[in-house]
Length: 426
Ligand SMILES: C[S@@+](CC[C@H](N)C(=O)[O-])C[C@H]1O[C@@H](n2cnc3c(N)ncnc32)[C@H](O)[C@@H]1O
Image 1 (cartoon, rainbow, N blue to C red):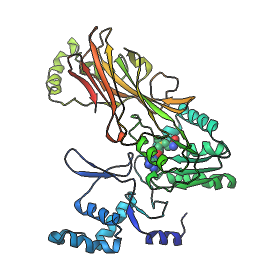
Image 2 (cartoon, protein in one colour):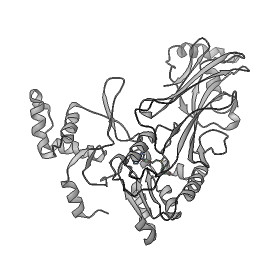
Image 3 (cartoon, rainbow, N blue to C red):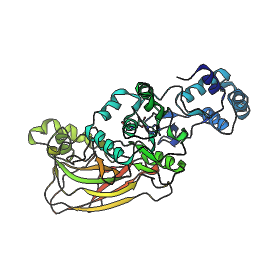
């Protein structure tokens, strides 16, 4: 618990925009900002942008109102006054968009997404995932190790590192779940407690200890890139002095597989999407067909649980590419891409492309979201890209897989031999 004195000195320390703050222009032209892939986005008005720019240039709260009035001379009546500016700064600080120099503790962790106990539990109850991480950490970590747990969540990987004898563990977690992480630390024996340090902030704004020997993390979503694993680990490795630091995971491979969805909750949805309506359905399906033609299905993909019996594999799973994670490629490295042709051998009534990943924790230990694989974990699902028509035997389809801008999304496009669009995740 921070003492009142340290809290007061934190309030006096200078405010600056978080290193983690990222901006994007949405399709309607609005400027949006977020601090992490798992937290929500918010709109930026010109006044907030100006406040952020002034803080970035070193202005501090007491000067902001005057500077804002000089900057927006012509519209002075609508500008926030000092009370409103304080409230805005507080909101931005609570959302971890603003941080205080030298302070490693956000006043509150981010409440959304991973701040939710049940989301953390879904990961803790995933036996294959936990066992694989425990083994990988046990094999790599020992008494001379200083482990950095990036995105520590409820503290699982930090505990595995301590159990493996790590001399020091630094756990970084940005959301409110850091509160239970602190409780976990309190519950440890004194010897272990001393070895665990908690940073409740975004990793871009955390101080990285100079003696780190191991970086452990699990920053994968159903789309393995959606939680920002590449930019986050790129930033961590760039700031680690020890260029020999070991990373768990080492890399992540992307797979695609063409399947016929023959059973399960997706079967009727996908077979009707591909054009198969039964004669008995004619009465109600006329209206459905009319509506279907007005809907924009160009870019449809979703994560869905697939039991091995729900699909018939129409071709072997193909590895598209592998992305190193210890360290990840720089932002200027060209993004990986792969292209495949698949010969269709038999009619496929409800075709879908499954996009899956396999994370290599070490060279000997992996986890995946690929249905039916030995290393498949329980809480992830593959991404499903439904194809918009049934495929006939002897036709050839083309699949292109790549990585989206900023390395935060896997993309895929399927087309037929005439170049006609079949489905996409863009
Ligand atoms: C998939 S969960 C894994 C949690 C835990 N390591 C485990 O294996 O059970 C990822 C966690 O990383 C946190 N996180 C993601 N990006 C982060 C960042 N850049 N800085 C700090 N925490 C981050 C999320 O809030 C979430 O709790």
